[in-house]
Image 1 (cartoon, rainbow, N blue to C red):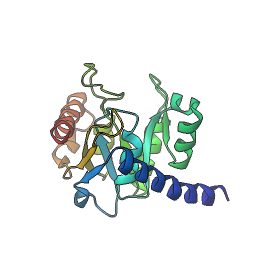
Image 2: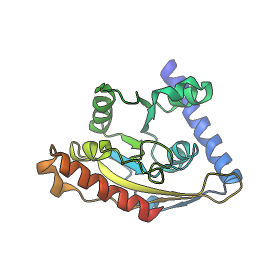
Image 3: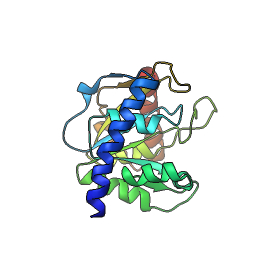
Amino acid sequence: MSKFFYKIMRIIVKFAILVYCKIVYRVKIVGTENIPKKGPIIFCGNHKSFLDPPLLEVTCKRDDTRFLAKEELTKNPFLGFLGKVFDAILVKRNDKDLGPMKESLKTLKEGKCIALFPEGTRNGIKKGIKPKTGVAYFALNSNATVIPVGIKGGEKPFRKVIITYGKPLQLEEYKANRKEKAVLEEVTEKIMENIIELA
């Protein structure tokens, strides 16, 4: 009963968020033809505002996308509810628990999608924070397609938001040396370059 309830709630909440985004933020969606209809995908985008996660969730054209989210967000009742509805993978900040990484790889192995922001926090690039290599790790240790996402706007209501889905990234050449830190950093940089170009 619980799974059925959350499945129905997911449909309702996604529709409500999409309507809200179109009315309040006049959202424009670009590049959805680049998103495979089947198979595992890693969506990775820039992070500018609280709107980014739900916006990506309701526009990516996939119903099996799970977000990596900070565990402390669940302290907010509304965000905690969204986390349950969208089956978020909760991550503890500065924690070495491998559970979220294993759960993410398991999700991809099942042919589903995960979504995350390499910046690790809002406006991480502007703050001079080094992007996290987690997205590179997931990309090189799975058969998932990596789709960069660029988000423009969203900081204030009634200003147009554009979310752009880029073409899949080719990363096969890096997989042979996927355990090397330098390779993870290089792949992360390549992914971020594509995100920034779209944003």
